[in-house]
Length: 143
Image 1 (spheres, rainbow, N blue to C red):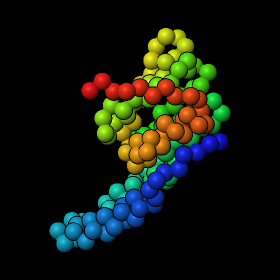
Image 2: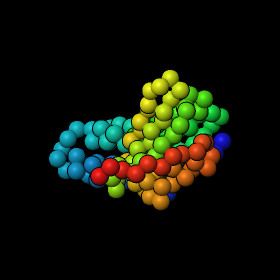
Image 3: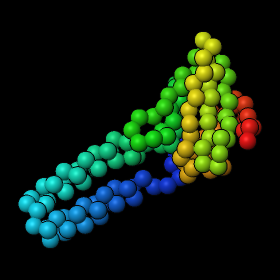
Image 4: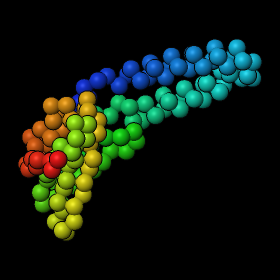
């Protein structure tokens, strides 16, 4: 399995959730809201659960013939190599790039890439896909 690791450490979000929880507890106690520890505990617990489930995923990974791109909060985007005829990569703007997969059935699958640190900076994602998954054709944007 080939992995494109993240640029930034996802553990900082875990620490941020705990810090925000402590701040919320102190404010809820000051406002005399009943059971502030339970309310904040549920909120922080949910944040920790989300971090454990999704926060420690790599930026992208290849497992078998599947390419997974973690470009959002919850589920990774997936491309299946045998279905792809050609891959194109295009810079839409400074903060958004697009990966376009021309499928063998004649249709296209477009993936908007917007995570600057993990994917766009230095075209990390495009280089990873080109090196480990399949060749990419670079397109120029029509601005």
